[in-house]
Length: 384
Image (cartoon, rainbow, N blue to C red; front, side, top):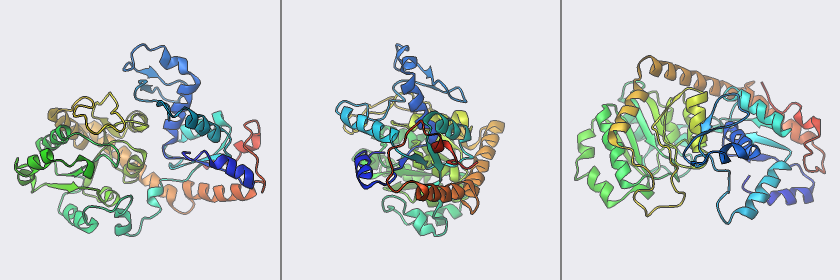
C-alpha cells in the first residue's frame, strides 16, 4: 500500500488492483476504527492514558502515542491522502495472516469495508524445505545458519531464549547492556542479536573487556549483525522469542509455535503486542509504554530504560511462568500447528490463494475502481 501511484496506472491499463498490507488484519482494523471514531482518543487529555478501541470483538486498550495512524507525520499529508484513496478504491485486500489466527477480525474487516479479503499466510512458511534458504530471509546472515543450528543442537528442548529486534528497531548501548545482564541473571541459555546499527565501542568493551561473553560462553551465543532468524526460531531448542513485534517477526514466531516477550518500538508494533498478549494469549509484556522516536539514532535516552531486573523477571515469566506459562506455551504450540496446516494443501491459506487467483481472473478485463456498494465484492473472499 506504499505505492498509491499504482492506482492511476491500473485504471489506465484497465486491470484490477489489490492492496497488500504488511501488518495483521487486527492492527489495520484498530487503525480504521480509531480513525472512524477519532473522538474516542481525542477525549483523553493525556497521550499516555489508554483509550478503548471501539467496535472490536475484544476489549483493546491503547494510547494515542502507541497507535498513530499511518503517515501522520508532518510532510506526509499529500502521500497519506493518496494512500487512503488508493486503499479505498482497491478491488480487495491481501493479508499475510491466516484465518485461524484472527477469524473475527478478518470477518469484521471484510464487513466494514465491503471488500474481498484473502488471508494467504504466514508467507514465511512458503519455503519450508531448505534450512539455508530459511536462514537467508532479508539481509545476508552475519553467521552461518548451520553453525547456529549446531549450537542449538547442544541445548535442551525449549530452553533457549532468542532476542532479536528486527532491522529498523534499535536499542541504545545502555539498553543492550541491561538486556544482556538480565539474560545472564535469568539463568537461561540465550542467543542475543546485536545488529550493525547497535554496535559501538561501549558495547564491545562490555562484551569483551567487561567479560560478558567469557562469563556466559557456556550458554550464550552473541550474533553481531543479521541473524538467520527463521532457522533459529524453527529449532526445537528455542523456547521463547524476545521481539520488537514487527509483523514479519511476529508471524514467524507464531508459525514456530513460540511464546513471545513483547518489546514494541513504534508503528504497528504496539497493536501487534495487544494481539499477541490480549487476544491470542501467547505473550508476556516487557512493560514498555512510550514509543521510540523513528529515525533518532544519536540520542542516548530515547525512551525509558528497561532495567536488568525487569528483563530478568520477564524472561523468567516467559520461559517458566508456572501454570500460566505452561498454558501460554500450549496455546503458542497449537497456533503453530494451525499455521502450518493453513499452508498445506487444502488448508485455509492454500485455498485462499487459489481463490485469489480465480477471483482476479474473473474480474472484468477493464476493471473500474471498487464500488463499496457493490455487494458482489463481499462474496467468497475469505476461506473459513
